[in-house]
Image (cartoon, rainbow, N blue to C red; front, top):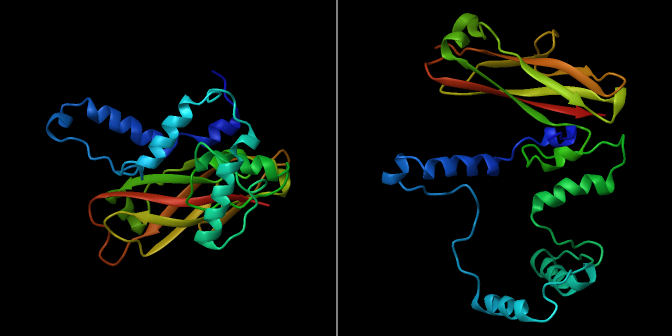
Length: 248
């Protein structure tokens, strides 16, 4: 099925990937001797209060419980949420305009940019964060992961054969936007003495920037390299991350 570029930017969520791994493990031979202990979600291990269960059971039997519930029908709950915000955080919120019931928080962070931003306007996204707001914003935030062995890292103190990560950007900011790569970080048994990166064929540096084309697109590559400490890199698996943002 054809999907939009916005959906492609979202990718797969961490919960979905973990759910697939859990499903595969539960049907594996290993699961027969070692049952899965699931710590991937912050789900409560406590039963709901009996009063809440009784209220929900009674509501299900009420006439009209299977009809559509529009915004006005949720006012008692929204007022309770506003009251809780005041008692818990001393923050006043308008139950009519500032409280919205969601399936989950990612639904809100995905739809909020559509509600408050116009094409060409920039948004600021926390990093790290859930991917949901990124799929809605023209300013795409991405993480590039590059892995290499200790042998390759040790050649001359840097990557002997750097692996380039492809970076593709589609932005509604047009040529006024700039792609910024920064914060190269080595993850592995040995910490790096120095770290650098570059976009395309630019010189290696702590940060690297490239301007987007007039249509708001850019296809480039990202390389990272790390200086070895005095004792060199020990054997093991290494990976590298860099933060890539698109700003106006």
